[in-house]
Length: 179
Image 1 (spheres, helix red, strand yellow):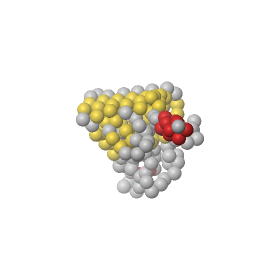
Image 2 (tube, one colour):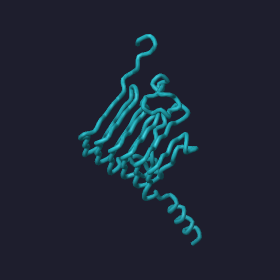
Image 3 (cartoon, one colour):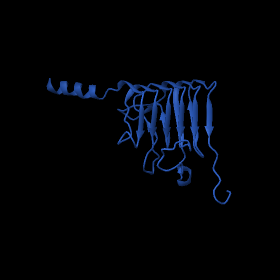
Image 4 (cartoon, helix red, strand yellow):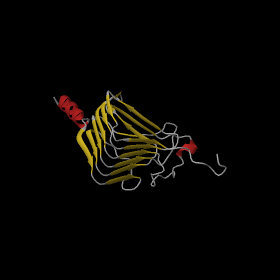
């Protein structure tokens, strides 16, 4: 009986939260010591959400959540390497499309607009290509997606509506030699 009870409690602790909501300012590094860990069915950002990784690794780190079915962004999201919006299982690590993705705000991956980036927008020079991946059944974005130099914006869904939206991938900047 004790074993079954402990197993039931362990399973309950693995369950995703119903809602993660940011109405303020979250910055890593800055207001947060570590990148925020979000394991929630619904992700809502109405404020400022910035994640700038401070080290470069062999596997490019994208900011991503776990067990998220519905994403809503009406604020500002910035990340120096980028984002992956899908439904990644915290239990198995497997990926499936999220149900809904809505962006009325601004999502920026490795853009020069990210003035809090510790690399100062130099990611393209060190072999990193900022990327933003969205995989959801329904994608609606009247907002802005911005990817830095040589970046990628990939939206995969059954119903995709980008009416009044903006997709922008920045051009390489000229260096001191005009190249």
